Length: 111
Picture 1 (cartoon, rainbow, N blue to C red):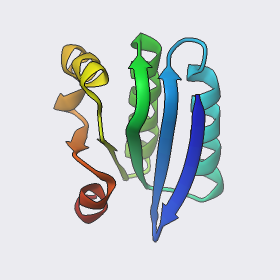
Picture 2: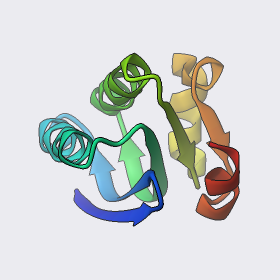
Picture 3: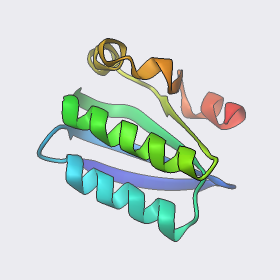
């Protein structure tokens, strides 16, 4: 899994590329948390455009970042969720608590 971060005003965009599974979850968690803490981020956009696969470990990463951001009074959303990953989000019920946008530009306007 490869992560590329971008900052847009007070928002952090985490572009994820690869498979978000039990092999990569801990590394992704640590890298995102480090940026949240270092830059005092309260608005996080997870861009899933490059994610080819996600399992329950990926759900844990997303839920954990949601809780971390929410505890600071912030907001988290996801964008560009591919079909296979979308199914995981739907089955897990994540879309009940996390907003999804079709692209980063749309997400930047809404959170």
